[in-house]
Image (cartoon, rainbow over all chains, first blue to last red; front, side, top):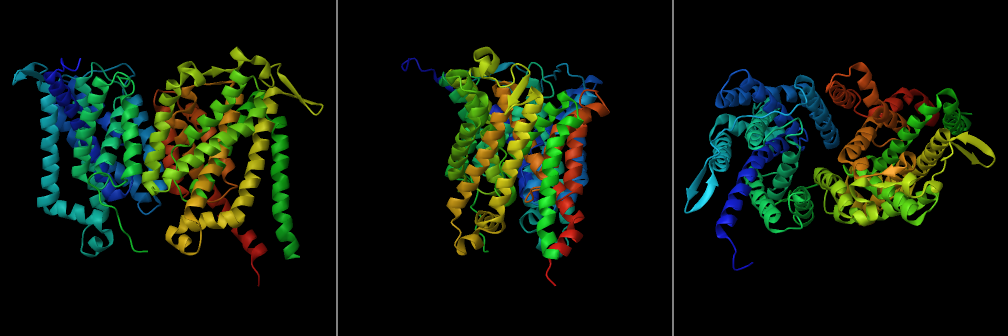
Length: 300
Length: 336
């Protein structure tokens, strides 16, 4: 058994793991963006991404090509995210953490309700964003779809990084997240920065949803529920404070979960999600700040 | 005079609560009293969560999992050991209390949202864990009282006779659940107004200040978790007794979320409003179903109602009650 160890299978499974991890990374990044600006985990992030995917499905259904629908949906999701923040998060901006958490849990029901109201329960499918044809690299077959997912995710993460690092808007976004009071004194419109953060998060989630759906034979309103849990695990692993951490954590988690699922028979396919949950618990107990987070030290 | 009233008014309020408790089943249909008994299960769990979250400031999104411990303790004792169902309630409470205590130990390292996430992961993982240990829990089939030991089900014949009084099974479940609920409420009230309650609130308001004032943080935080676990276990046990079957789907993460919603709607850090919180989570889904039965519409109304209540009533129903009665309580308890 050990002698017949198949290195090309390991390479394939690693890339498959990276591919799903890359999609989780987008949602994890969305969670981290909102955590940094609003101070809570948005439990509705997965459902919002699911709704975006349904919008994309309708656009494709009305004759748009995949990529036209893709960019239209990203734009719509951005507006939707801003709208949600203005409507329900702004009124509780200064409320205790638990209150905002409850609001996002309420949002889970609301968004889910909209998706079940507007679209029938029958399963749907989206065309593939990339060709499913395998390509040979160094004698190992990889699917173009997996490589495409990884490329899109890394591209988007870099784009977000550039936005935050090199633009005036990014500076304002970071300032509003790190020190709202002083930013307000310096003329940053903190409340609107939070709304833009929600918009960016919704757009990232939309991309995650639209890349997750084509990989499945069919999807329904439960599309993003497992993805949200994996993304939460990835974000916690990397550190909820750290965007880089969220991405690295999700990629690591993707590879880890896929390899454990492939090579450990006892885990197989059914226990992948509990493995991710065990990662959440383990990280929180051993190093709550995550791999890239800093432990907050406060004067009281 | 005012001093006498200051003692008499709360006593009268308590007497009125007991009166309502005794009378309600005679005012509503038999079937409806069973619905109310289900609301009572939520009530007990919410009171327990409020001790932990409302008074000690530790957020738990995993109380459904503690209810699962209680429910499965009862089910295992009835099905495997053929105990009478109602006698398993104390053991179910103790079992969940111990698990609560054990969760409380690692929880010492976590606070705020991180604790919420950890307990959330626990709640999400619970159904798969229950399926995995199928020897004890019956796997995804669960444990059915009626199949394995029907004679241990109180009220199997449709009526129950207690101390010579005969009531219908549904009325019995109502009295059992809300009776335990009211006793639990009274105990919670005694806890929060005494030495423990002061320590809990001090921890909630500032851990550093509490520690420097000599409050033993690890002791009181794990104690709050254990107490809260006892309430959740008793609630889970009553849930199992009412439904006569438990399976992994009885205790999903949705249940944990409902309990937190109930506690917030009822009012964290206050006790009387929690009855309203329990009724809210019990009746809102069917109310939402009455408004429209289009697929998705009940979910939408349900979520929107939760968001609206949280935005409009920051202190929950308890906060509202407090404000309504503020003139009375100020008049009664202010020394001039």
